[in-house]
Image (cartoon, rainbow, N blue to C red; front, top):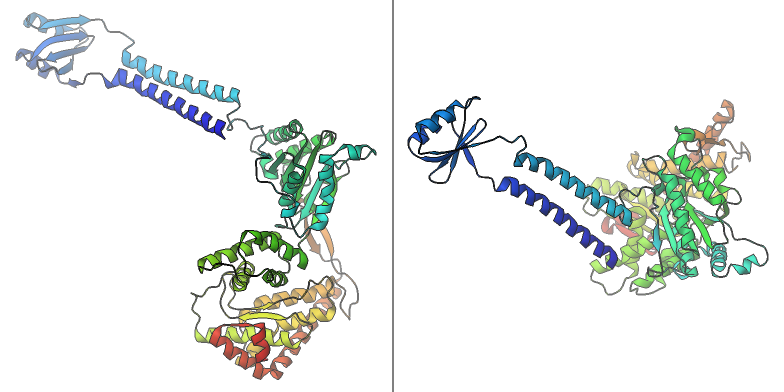
Length: 598
């Protein structure tokens, strides 16, 4: 860093010197020139006649007179020079100096010399920087990889939680970098490339850095988009330079994040084989073929779209191993929360267990955001430590958006929202297969929700029975059923509930084989559309009669669940009204309060 600062100081002083030289030359030729007043010929003659002019300089057609006060005037004469000759004969006391006109004046010299000199100095500076390797603007073929060395913040496996299986697979890479002879002794070789696959925010980049931290080796990291440039051939040059840097710092790790930006299936773009991205991919494939593992260099890459990668990139000998980094389960979420909670003051560590239960499907990045938001909330409230209320509010903010208490609802709108959310709670509570209800609120949130009913799963479910799915659909229809029972009419507030219920019912029939009429059959096949980036689409691979039967079955499932929800609301109307009255009073009900009112 000191060398960079010294170089920047020298460069700044050099530019100051260049501009100082430019303005110095300009001032020399133009700044010190005497100002001459242009006058008509008659006025010039009158000035000589009155004795105001003491000397005259004649140069070509310019006749310049020097006044007694030191100023000068200038007039134009005829091409033959009759004016100057006549004045010299008529006024002999005036000193006349006849000079030859030079075709190349000082002003003209300055006008030409200054730009030439300035351009020469700039070219010299650029060439000097290029030769010193300091010119980043013109080094298009250089890799933009960032080198993380021993002086940078060290990340180890202790900083990564919730992905124990992935850590175990990557531990082999660490062991190889520490002791390669242990593997080579039996004739085995470490995989040339390891592809980390997982949803966004699951910690793929952090895992790669932890491998480098555990092994204590240099770590080159860059994004797949850093290879692609508007200039042809730049991406391939950067690939060559990246692998060259890795070999020069062996043992080392090269990490390419979002490799799908450069490794997409060839032929999926309109540019065909001449596309710049495909040339970059071809160079990457070539480098990986000649990528020797004996030198202690390992290639890691990460993507959340493995389906779009070129098959040649995934074959044996290139990315030999694929490590799946899944969303954390309950224990994994709690472990991740504990890792991020190290840097905050927490009232009780047991709070993290409850937050972990209430965040199914959250990634590691989401959980880190929850901890950070909780710390900010506690600081805003001038608290010494982060409490459970801070954590729960932070979780709700991250998952469903920020509360919009400034949004003032009319009393009628507030009442409709209260009945809608209370309907979800009553039906959800009445159907025992649903998850326990954690909280019911009618406070609007920034994601467009006027209220919400939040569940708190007791454990992660990996298998869901048919009756459990039907119970979920019944709960989704609880809000619409409550509106109809209380007001005799319905609103559009259940649009998201109906959409989710319809999706569940259609998947029951088309994917999970849960239809009692159509049987255990999967309807619809997956098709990979090449020129749309190999996106997974669904096409109808069945007859029109079957399509009608599917629609009827889906409609029947939804109608049965809606009818069941209406029956529950009618039976629990007194409890529904009590919950609505309490919501109108305090806007939020937790699970224990809901149990009391039920």
